[in-house]
Image 1: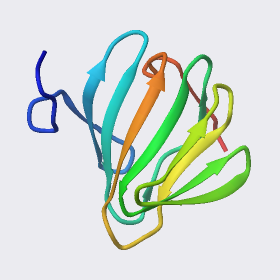
Image 2: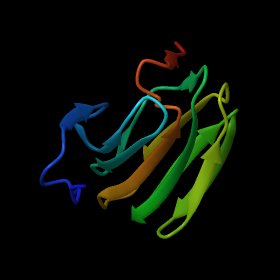
Image 3: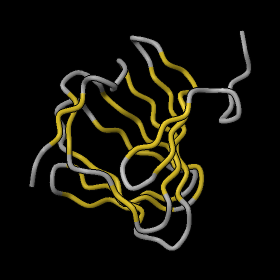
Image 4: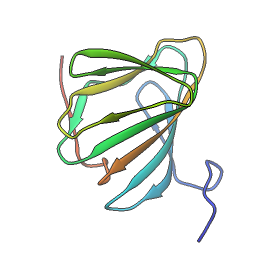
Length: 115
């Protein structure tokens, strides 16, 4: 077993120059720590199989889920079921940091929605 952190795991860039680190990457479970700069967002999408739980570590996230808007603050989370159309925004002037837990893994399962 190895202790995982953003210092020793696979890093990637997504969306508007946002960062992600694979803390756990398996076929059945994914745990990713992500960081969004101020005033960034991602595109509307859904996952065919994966359900996801977003837990906010620092800042406040705004989620659009099936057309509804939710503000999720630090030390709180939100569950998104498979097939639910969603996206995340950082509307604030501060960096947003959060965990994304997906079961099964969400990579390769994402369907982008053009609007």
